[in-house]
Image 1 (cartoon, helix red, strand yellow):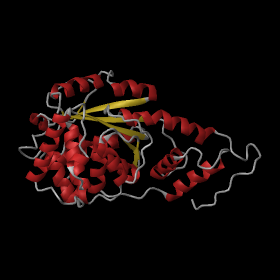
Image 2 (tube, rainbow, N blue to C red):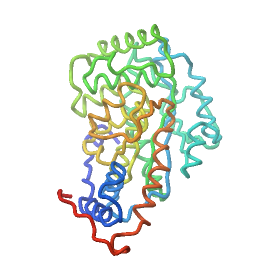
Image 3 (tube, rainbow, N blue to C red):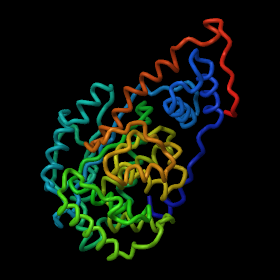
Image 4 (cartoon, helix red, strand yellow):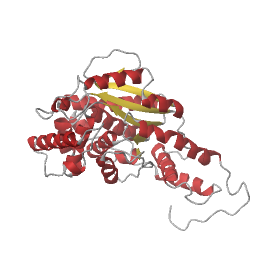
Length: 361
């Protein structure tokens, strides 16, 4: 895929008929109208995405993009790239936090080496390495044009493969030391919001560390001429990703584009995943119709991005673990809601008059 092919991708609208049929089905269930709130909206949205009111989300996966970020050379993180290697290896071995949670939720974890600095050859870690980490964007652009396209294509391809293997809902996650710096930088330029309003403490920076992080990001934004302009066009978004992005973000952007292309709902996790979702929407408008927000996140940019995408998070618990853990938390809740949607009695079953809806569906 070249840049022109990426920019020419067209996203089909979700099915309004399937959405409406799902609404009619909810209304027929013996309970108050809209009694399950936003969860009813999510199931209707999934019906529209898949084109079928007979919703099925029984085969679940979480794609975790793992990559290192050269910007850690600037002292913006407590940890080094060795942590990315260790946690990614733990994912491959099924013992990382997301693996424990996914096991309970009945979901499969798909960890992907899209840009880990170290070379890891281990069963269970999908090797789709674009490069051994990104460059230090304080000194040079983080990703080449070719590398960015390859990372996006990787996300699209993995999503397609999961769809072909029967998966019907995907969560997104990431692992990579320094990626709250890359995501904060991209959030600032894509939202056109000052860096101090979007940059958080990541894995636990003190006040001095946060000041350093903000300064590094601000200087880089000026270096690439990205300040005081709205990043609206595909070309501007692509350039921003090359200059200050991460390979995990680029790969996840591909996952969101793939979800829209292959009609599979994709759940946003925290701020890194949310930045990737916003980038996907800016690169390929219409993708957001296929996204589901899981949680508001602890990083300040997370809620701002979800608001820009007109997506409402379900969970507001100050989550900041990453790895896709917040998105995976959605799975058991959706399973419980689906039990009502698929198995509950209807008003006809109990011979009671159905509630009337006085607003348009």
